[in-house]
Length: 108
Image 1: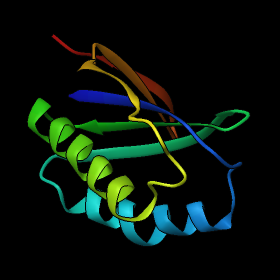
Image 2: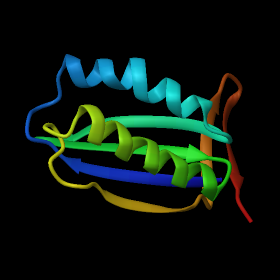
Image 3: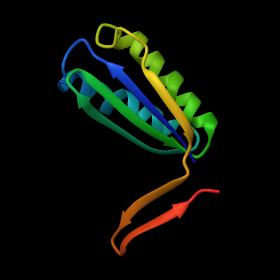
Image 4: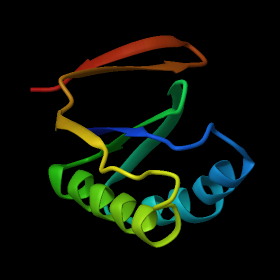
């Protein structure tokens, strides 16, 4: 698996418009990319937006970065005036809670 963390500085605080863009446009588009595993966004601080996207491979992670850049450029440029700080790489371990408890799978 491959994860991408994007950290953006925003010109405004988190609001319903941003949430709507994520829910109606960005996340459904991400789900259509090959190898999609998960997407998480968070309010990382005052006027800071962070996201973590996980794909089965690097190609999916890179495609998600391009998709995010396109959406910001087309519809949210006033909200995110500078490019995000991007950190990405192979996932080495993860944990997912299940109804039977948590389990861990290490990546080779």
